[in-house]
Image (cartoon, rainbow, N blue to C red; front, side):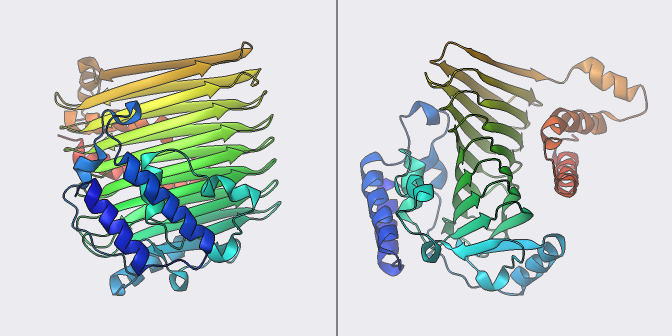
Length: 423
């Protein structure tokens, strides 16, 4: 399905799904006009290892719908037992009847937002990126999450797919008010073993002194296409931590842009991509230091086997007025087969003269003496590979501050490694 097919789909979508808010209709039209000119990213340096259009060619489009059966109910029951606040999308459409959020303020996007609110101007004046154009061309009802001042909360956002050929486009807008503490977990999951695509756009506003831990998990079958864009804006003394986990999908492309807007703002970005088969993960992260006395840290790790391919592009940009910045960046890859590929592109762009910055990248394989050490202690080579790979990725998993969530995800990762790396 090429660029012209998607334009036709978007135009039909606009006719079939009119929006109640005029400003939202204008956003959708603006995005479609931009997508008509740009098409899918093919020549951009930021996409040179990933042909988005190629991955989406096999898609057989079906208009998103919110129909669901007992399979979905069973999934929801499991998550309700684990999370007090649960927000559910079904095929990209907000399902309020399946959601519950007693300790957090949640509203549908277009009934909650005024296009003139300064916090969301960056949503209506969206970034110049082809994937954002694509998402906003299919803009539909999303969700606004408000973490109130001086509160602490955990919110799970579950995006369920129930049918083959669905290409869903959820929108998630988050506002962490002053001195709030929010843990946010996003996960896409299919209740059918079918081909589908999903593109999620998340915008996070972190007010003065607020703290947000944002975990984004992709752990699906090898027929899934997942496109994600996240933008975070951090005010004075705010703290934003993003943890991206790509653990299964035919394509998982993630764009993350973090802006440090005022002094004392701090950002951390951690990513782990564990790939098998012909899976393809491409993570692009920008941290923009726009104010003095801001700090950031960035670590990405890849574990690749079979014929998988992992790409990491990390950019730290320090503006001229951003003096006394402290920032670090590191990418490490572990290659477990002859045909797996890792591409690393760490970048520093520094226009201030009083900064402390570092970056680095390494790619390597397991050493024979490491495996031999385990074997001399009665541990088979297959089990040793799993343990060593898990130890390599564990640095990222340990960055999850919420203990219960960390243990849950760590169990899933270890189970996945045991199934696919022990051979």
